[in-house]
Length: 352
Ligand code: AMP
Image 1 (cartoon, helix red, strand yellow):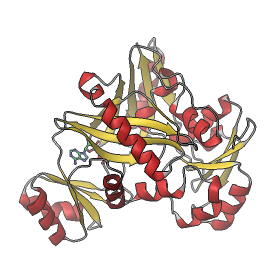
Image 2 (cartoon, rainbow, N blue to C red; image 1 turned 60 degrees about the horizontal axis):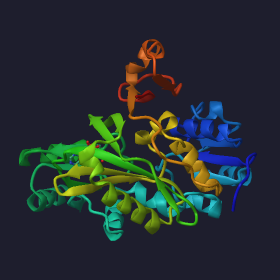
Image 3 (cartoon, rainbow, N blue to C red; image 1 turned 180 degrees about the vertical axis):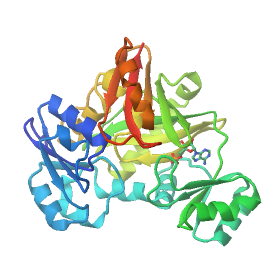
């Protein structure tokens, strides 16, 4: 079904991804309604409507759903059960959301969809961690099954004596233990999948992280990564098909000497796709909207020779004046308030 311009798109979550989605929606004539428990989420100030309520407030969700023609989400840590009342209006559906919420379920699902992942074990006690070390060797990284992002909820074990400290550092929570990968590079594939199963992939993006947080994304990703494009895009499509996903889906990979390994997936637009706003014919935000609205998918190709996106993290935001003065630099500020260390406050894209 096609939802024509003038329709209302509900977005669960009011962060910068919702903000950029709402800006993309306005450009093609749609209005957005943000649902978020915070007082002044940065997506709400660029949207027509805002509901402030907890994500499990079923009465508020019911009213919100009734006021929207389609509902989507901009982050995955949402309670699944209350969202059932949105029915088919929720795109992507609950399966995409549920799988991406739990790193253990995600890895089992990825394996069942035929994707290669890092060797891993589920752990729920210090004994399990010791067993994982015996089976996987060192180093390994513990990642809490739920609520981790940007390197939070993660601790490395490099020597056997680090095990207890790492287990305590992640709060003794159910986790996955993953073998440390000696990767050559990291990259992501952002694809959009329409209701009829058609997909479009953006060019592979090379991602550089520091302290678990994305620093830069570069396209083209370079020959070593591009040589893996066929396998990586096929894996992303297989994952999208297995989820019955509608919308943008991001798959993050490690490029290793034996080919691509999936690190994690996000059932949504992604930081590593921000370069597409200026750098692709259709941005990831518009592409997501096109997929959930039943519109034709857009041209995902790069419009320049190269695009480099740099995140502005914490106090780096205060470089805004210098960036505005730089020819060819496109600045995005999210107006999120306090510039706490590690917080993504904006980004800048440079095309050449
Ligand atoms: P994640 O939250 O899983 O994306 O992890 C954040 C970052 O930590 C990744 O982008 C990598 O740079 C690094 N990392 C995570 N897992 C591993 C691993 N198994 N081996 C090596 N580096 C990793």
